[in-house]
Image 1 (tube, one colour):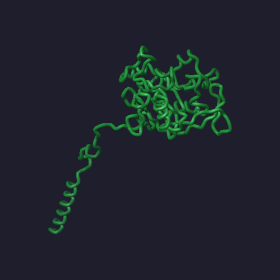
Image 2 (image 1 turned 30 degrees about the vertical axis):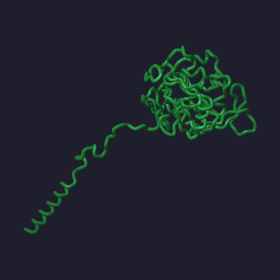
Image 3 (image 1 turned 90 degrees about the vertical axis):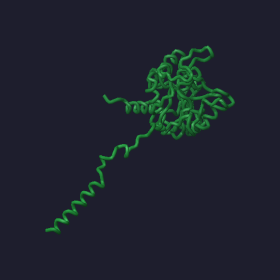
Length: 289
């Protein structure tokens, strides 16, 4: 009997020791498992507007980080190649947004167009060098063949990319060799400004990234409609807009809608598939009924 009692006492001592040596997980403070970061890091999928970040959902490289492209750098042969803030052309032109402003509502009241270009350079790196160093121009976004978006300026600033559209627009240069007179090539053929042209296709990654960028811009800037100028039959126009048409249009348009001497984004650009993707992205982010 005594032996049994001793054995029972030893077992109870062992069990009690095990219980006290291993505290339950819930008794350990949560912070010991999941430390809270001191700041929220950038996701790499945001654009910058008036110093604020807005999520896009695809890779974006800013002008402030490598290997980005900084259009505000005035050290090149042409000096300043953009207009800080938003204003009409000329020193006495009306100022819409002051340089360095964080007034998002003033910018929203000004920007109502998103202009699409092809860069005729084939890569974003080459496009930036041509714009900055050879032509003394700028654009807000570069879209490379792999779908990477490069933002070169805060959108409060006015890039020099589409003449009369500059004060009210945002511009993107899509990496593509561009359109030329139709011949024996294997490019996509179509008519722009009454010219029979052909052009290499844009990549699926470019369409995907562009749709996400366009959808984000339509949300940030509610005056940008997710549509392009259309003819009486409902097809996207392939010719330049008249002055009254241009003044009244609020949405997404090609450079050829702004200027009669331009063909970009060219006959290879699939407008309807693009807008279907934009609407799909907007539907993803719409609040549930």
